[in-house]
Amino acid sequence: MTPIRSSPSRWLWGLLAAVVAGLIWWHATILLPFVGSIILAYVLRPAVDALEKRRCPRALAAMACLFGVVLAGVIVFVLLVPIVSKLAPMLREQLPDLIAGWWLQIAPPLVKLGLPIPVSLAEVKTELMELLQSHGAEWGATVWQSLVIGGGNLASLVGLGLLIPMLAFYWLIDWDRMMPPLRELIPRRWRSGVYGFMEEADTLMGQYLRGQLWVMLILAGYYSLGLMLFGFDLALPIGVFTGLAVCIPYLGFGLGMVLAALAGVLQFTAAGESLWQPAIGVAVVYGFGQVVESFYLTPRLVGERIGLHPLGVILALMLFGQWLGLLGLLIALPCAALATVLGRRVLQSYRNGDFFLTE
Image 1 (spheres, rainbow, N blue to C red):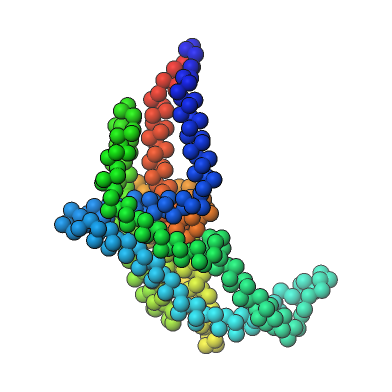
Image 2 (tube, one colour):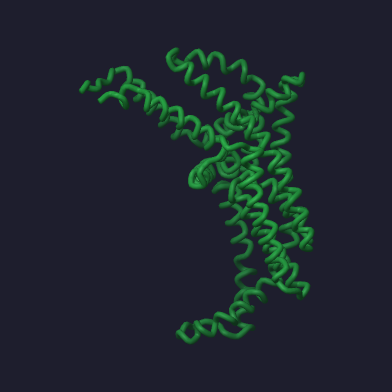
């Protein structure tokens, strides 16, 4: 059996990498917009290259792609305005009655167990109204900060929203000029592997962007039309929001379904109609939409190469959401796909190496 020796240079490179990683972690807050802009520029580069090949100036192509990203984000938030403005007062008025009705059904068994709980309808309504009036704004702000801003504040979110596209613009217009010097730093024996990975990654990003855009547009039209057929007043904003939000796997679909269910319950309850219609409508529209997206649209338009295991998708969403907030949720899937490609190549190199093959 051949003994494994480690040269001092490898230890030196490992120590240098550890020091660099520590510095990056120590200054993570400062480097966040730069890392986010690099990722955004890399994701948009295939689209910019495609526009440049069609004789569009690169600066104009970069501005157009970044404008599209910003516009999509603005549209998603603008669509939330009519939804929230209409649902908030309805929720404040009808939620006590709905919960009180459900409470009267579950309270008797709890009273029999000897629990000191309010039983009368007036007591339940009074306590619910006091909770909503005293803590409603606080709860709403907490949920907004946790889900959308990712633990930061509104000022930092707006600042990142302005700074990251601006930095990404400079990365995009100077990408071809900055990359060759960096490629020359790659050791010669690694160049073929690194170049192969970069070529595969570029193909992956182009396929992902084109396919995901078509999936979002198709589903936005489908959810809007489906909810309209079942009589939802907020069918258009909720449907378009759901379609655009599917770029965030699971979370976008789930949030759209919750909004549709809440809107249906409040709308049909106020009209004195049965809750079966909104329940069936949400189940049919969103259930069929999820099946079509998972088994037809995504495999056909995005491609099997993008496909990740659901556990990997959830882990990527949690990690990138914690690191970068809303931006992290948007880029989690393409970054996870690139990490999968890199992992496959590293595993293949390991299996072909002397360390694995030597007995």
